[in-house]
Length: 394
Image (cartoon, rainbow, N blue to C red; front, side, top):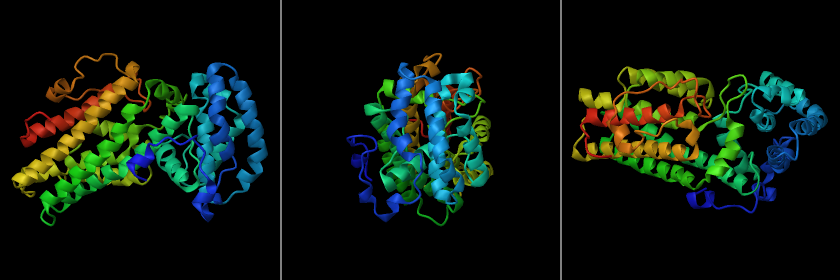
């Protein structure tokens, strides 16, 4: 799926012909898929606008869960279980706007089935994750044509593209991270300049995809974001803060700071399963000196003029992503920023100190002080540039 195809609006969120997906289209389908794909967004809109109560929503869903319970409880296929679990979590997300009453508002059977699925099938979690809502949701869309979203109408199309865009962008960040990691791991066995130039190309593509979110209307994001807020018990919800390859990029470039370590510790339960051991391994290695900055400092990674230019370009691409992300977040979630003073690129770039990220008055969906998480990432990269002698404006 290329960038142009990805962001072309389809006639409706779920309207793709299953026949186009071959024999596998009907394998591993959730018995709740039709409801979650076709009806849930309209039901949530009705609750939001007051034409349906949460009690009515819960009663409707309880009836469906009662009807499908035998099929769900007898299923032994892990893929079907995962698809069903994704539907459970979308249904549960519909009650998050109830705040402290979230779990009391949801159908008791929904909560029981979520717990039972987690007990029966390895790797399922009782809360929505980045991996489920972005990666698995996008894989199901590619396989069956069905995508899960909270919003309806045009808002649903924008929400769909938000998830698909993250999924399509990440491989470029991942490839760039592995290129840098290889350079730090085996600096004498790879062509440093060629590797860094490839990293720059991948980061440029990553930024192109992620930059498409500037087209997401603020009202759309505000609407579906309410279903991605934290759970009533304090559990964090799915968030772009848990995109794993961005963390790998940073760990490959420079050693983790104390505040970045706090972020990684707090985020560990929410990263995709595949990435948890990789992030931990790279974190340990980076802290011990296996990162690009330390290799350059010790002389084990010798760069000629072209290599230094490519490294500066790679850091600048990463910085541009971080500053663009900060700008988009400031526009989309203004209530997450108690103050916008000092948020221009120059001011942040001149700052050298990271700020606390676990402010109890946080506004971010991931459970952090979103302003400080984003500005800290810029500060770390700006400090890296200074230490490497790249002092020109990024």
